[in-house]
Structures are given as structure tokens and as C-alpha cells.
Image 1 (cartoon, rainbow, N blue to C red):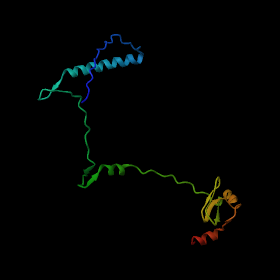
Image 2 (cartoon, rainbow, N blue to C red; image 1 turned 120 degrees about the vertical axis):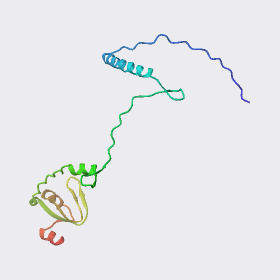
Image 3 (cartoon, rainbow, N blue to C red; image 1 turned 45 degrees about the vertical axis):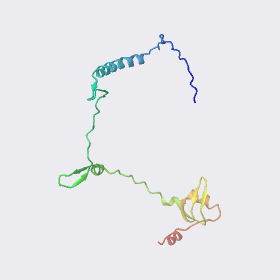
Image 4 (spheres, rainbow, N blue to C red; image 1 turned 60 degrees about the vertical axis):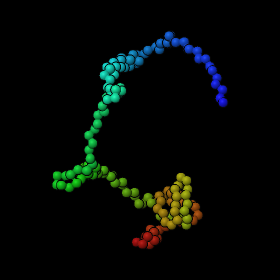
Length: 159
């Protein structure tokens, strides 16, 4: 069996002196505002609701419900429509600014026998690549890369 241990419980002393916290201007304003709120909540709590079985019921302020609106609606001509579709059609399309075309005289075609990447210059894939003149000068210094003529590139792409 279990041993029952008897302990004596001594009552504690009540704390009478509570330290006071120094208030600042912001806490004084907050206290003024909270006093008004506390007073109104005390008045509301005095009006206790009691249910049918005699128990106290805690109630709060009623929440405002927003009017629910269906996305589907009937148009004037009897066609079923959608508010979402109407909003999308009402928006003006965004105009895309055309980029100025690059001057083709600044570009050169090169042919590479394999995929190559060079930090600061770029990368080439196997076959024909269009690069700037500055990059072409650097690429042509490596092996496996040669300059391609415009006729060569045109025949390759079927023109």
C-alpha cells in the first residue's frame, strides 16, 4: 500500500505594500482613455444577460456583417455574367513600350564546336551564335571558335 504523508500548510502573509510605477505623459493619456473604456464596460457588465436555465451569459458587442455579394449575376439581356470577368474587361490593357532594335552592325556571328562559358564575356552554345564585336574579338582568341559569314548563317537556317 501507499504511504500517506501528512504535511502541514502554513498560511502566507498578505502583501499590503505594492510598489508604485512612475507614470509618464504617454501612460497618463492611456490611463485617461482606458478609464472611459472601463467605465463603459462596467455599465455594460451591469446589464447581465441570464439564460433560460438561470445561468449568467457573457455577451459582447454585435459584429457588423458585410453584405455578401455573389460573383454570378444576370445581365440586362438575360445572359448570366460574372462580376470578376466584368472587372477584368473594364481594366485598360497595359501598353508595352517597344524596345529600340539593336543596331545589327554591332553584332557578329561566330561558330563554336562546343558549349563554352567565359566569366565576364558570356557563353556560347554549340553551333552559330550572335555576339557583339567586342565579345567576338575575345572569343576568336580561343580555339574551336571561328567567325561565320552571313551567307553561311543564312544557308544553315534555310534562307
